[in-house]
Length: 475
Image 1 (spheres, rainbow, N blue to C red):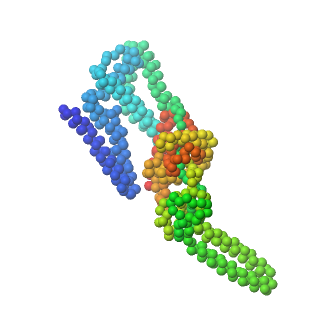
Image 2 (tube, rainbow, N blue to C red):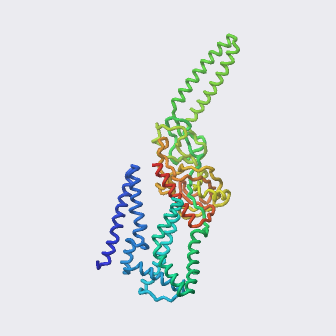
């Protein structure tokens, strides 16, 4: 094909078709609720979409993206030119030999030099990632598989390099030792940067701003909502009636206890008239027990008129539609709170919890979505991790940072659970953040971790693998 655009179009045709398939799979994933169909669609999106862009469109590998770049810059033998450029660079600066310049000059020569360095860095990075991933997932067998794969990938250029070093050892001893010292030093530095040198960085965790649990108004018993006395956004005082509930079972129990109490009172009077002290004593104790039960039932019936525990603003949705709806004991009905009833909760992963625990009582830095920064204090950490999601805004399906799954338990079917359990950490709310709305997502930087690139990559691979396994078991 003499046309450059035609050649580029042919090279991009396969990726275009795969991206169209990935787009159709994403559309199916969004509109279909069947777990099997969604799982297949998710796999197609990863395979035909992300993998295509990561590998086929990657110009550093001899796939479609490479040929598109070669045609675009009009360098058909881009990879061989880059390899020769890298070889000349090594001979000049590592071995000390004088080497002729390449055939390309100007911006094409600079492009080839940059491409050569990027390609070797990419190849080195892929080899390291494969080694770490395989050793993490398959232990010793993974290391053997990775060694075989790397040998097949880089064995030919390494063999050529060893052959050339043997030639230098026979004909240029100074260049041989110089290459061993400088080249070995560069390789050692590269391996040390990945496997040995720690990189200190802060531990970052998501934070949600919400009203305190004490501000939540919950149902004191099972029953129907008979009347709603307030509206959303209304400011109420302590003791203001909020909701009136109806529970016929409690009223029936009260009538039965009162009838039983009246019968015992009659029998007690008869026993007293007969001068039967033993029976009178037993009936008196029984009457006192019934009176206590009646008082408890009356208190529960009285609590069905829910009153505001403090001054604040009513926060609830669609209060009018709640009339004659059934609620169970402990269900949240509304929230009554003011600006002082807020709390900040951070979610810490298990692999970072030891570093974060060392920061309890110390100042930490918070960053809001608008890149505003605040200094807060880490007050306490929940001792046990949980996979329950405290706020839906943190879920990835709602744009949050945490991967979640739908709880398949029939008793809790509408709840989201995190794929990985997290620890809850409480932060002090600062006065400077009084204008931040409740429900805003933030991030906190607390504690430092000094890990190598290899150990961080190993942790990331293991966490992704464990989250995938958890999701597979859940579905």
